[in-house]
Structures are given as structure tokens and as C-alpha cells.
Length: 430
Image 1 (cartoon, rainbow, N blue to C red):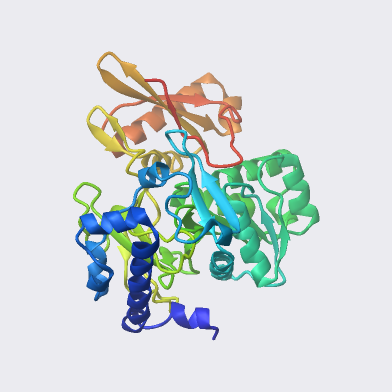
Image 2 (image 1 turned 180 degrees about the vertical axis):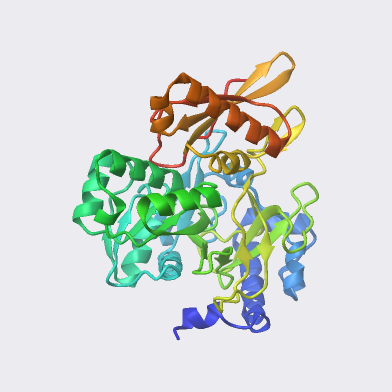
């Protein structure tokens, strides 16, 4: 068994020893080299020597996206810029990008983590990896690229968009592995169907999908339409990019690579830890990042944490499917809901396609929600009565699930804009 495989299956008590060593080292490092953290640690009355157990993680200050933007571009660096060999960035809500940096050592670690991620789905040297994540400042494309190359697989760096070219490459290059957002995989499946190419004409075996919340219902749709096994992956630029966690063959939560990241789940209101299995906000601390170590980063992503060993033999803690974000929760007539809840209902309705848009309006003093969802072509062919019947069924199912009435508009296939990157699910007209 490789060192990586041994670490994934090590007893939790044994792993905790070197996790503590790494945590103490990273706290000492940011205290010495990052003025932002030196100030925050001082405000929290915590010195590096105070970290004596993993329980002391709770004493450390949180880091937020606002902190990245307030210190833009290089205020969080723990190494000289001369040691930085790569910069990535994601867009910020204020217009200020969130900039992250990597040393040569960071890139080696990232490549190893992505190789571990792909191996969780059985990817090896004989595979052809069709990588349709975006290349550039977004971390997705290059993350999967270097992980696949680290394994020794053949990589097709096709990036996102240009769907006709995607279909040609999938068929002619014999791709066995697909990497992209879940929404774009469904768009590819739709395009394959329109081109008369059945899933059996491809060699696709597994797919790795992330960068946006998706449901079990969408997993079933992807697997059926593309004839592959879908693996859920999770990561974010501020921590490393993709490579934070991945499902194993059991598909019962995503294993966090705990030798590099310490996960917590906290109540987003009180910031206190919640019990295993209780939904809260995911918080991550990096243990091995050189250029940009991060303490207790509030991801805003909602999930659950399961520290129990998995049936696959791995002992890394697992996080559940991301069900939403603390900052994308909708409040409609006093009811809190997330887009993923709507998706779960929609994809359980027969003759509904997995493409939808949530339109928010202000009606008087209240917010109103309209769901636009595409119908299967057979429904449109059947006529207006069939379309109205489907709209009524969707409206009834949604009301049963969330407890309030919403508007539903059933539209023809292809009406809702497709995105080669993260799907745009909300159109806010308020």
C-alpha cells in the first residue's frame, strides 16, 4: 500500500498526532510571517505555544472571503513573492478578486491530492481524461489536469464550451473519464442525444463533478444519460482548489483529505461546533500550504460531518453533499429554502428536464418566486393541455415540499440558457 493509501486508512488517534504537529507549525508560521494573522491571534489572545491539542483549534480566529478581499492582492502571503510560481483568482461580489498563490511545493501537493481524488474513482494510467473544467484563473481545469498527469493518464485539456468540439473529442479520443460541472455534463448529454450519439457509442466509465451544488436526483440523471458512474468532488480556491474531498466507491459522503485539511462544521449563527450529522457551515484549516496557509476559513457551504470510518476502509472524515450556501438562502414569505431543495423536487417529477431557473420578484411588500423548468419534448408535442398539466403537477409537488405556493412556468426544451461553467440558477429581479 502506498503512503497515501496508508494515511487514508490510519487510525484516527495515530493521524491526530501529526495533524497536531502540522497545526502547531502552521499557527507559528502565520504568526511570524503574516501581519494579518499576527493581529487576529493577538485579538483572540492566542499564542502559537497555546496550541496543545486539536481541541485548541476552536480558539483560533476565523478567516472569511472578506479578509481575502481586504488584504488584496498579497496581504495573506506567508512567503516572499519570489517563491510564488502560480496565482489563481476567483471573482468577488464586491468586484475585488480573491487571489490565491502557490509555491512549487504547493503545486506538488495539489497534484498529489488530485491524483488521490481521481484514484478514488479507479482512474489509472490506461484512462483518457476528458477535462471540461475551465482553464485559466479558475482552479478547476488545471487542478484536474495535473492530478491526471500525476497518475500517468492521458489528458484531453479541452476546457469548457465549444460543445460540438467536446462531442468530437469524447467519441474520437475514447475518453473514459469526464471532469466538468454537473450541469454541463447534462448539457453534453443533451447535445449527444441531439447528435444521435448514444451513450453506448462512448467509452465513458466514470465522471468527477463539482464546483456547484447538485442532488442525488441529478446524479441519477447524469449516470443514466451518459452511462457512467458519477463521483462528487469538493474544493475551493481559498483552500487549494479541487482536491479537498471526494467520494469513494461507497458514495456515502466525501472523504476530506485530513492530512492536509482540518474540517469543522459550525452553526453559522453562533459559530459553535455542531454534532456529527447536524447541518452547519463547513470550516477548513490548511495544514500544509506554504504560500497561503489559512486558519478556520468559513466556506459558507452547508453540509454535515461524519467522523466515523467508512465501509471502504478509509478513516478520513466525510462531509455530506453540499446542500447550499449560507449566502444563497432564499427567504420567500418567511420560509427559508435553498435552490437544491427545489432541484430535488423538480427532478423527481416525471417528464421534467434537469434544467431550471428561479426568478425572484417583488410583489407589493412580499417576495415572490417563479420556477421556470423545461419539459420533456414529448410533453410539448402533446400540446398546451399537457404543458399546463405538468405545470400544475410541479406546483403541487413544490408546495407539498416547502409549504408555500410558487409560480411555475413550463418551457420548451432548450429554452433555459446553458453554461459551460457553474450553472446560473437564480435570476433576481427585485
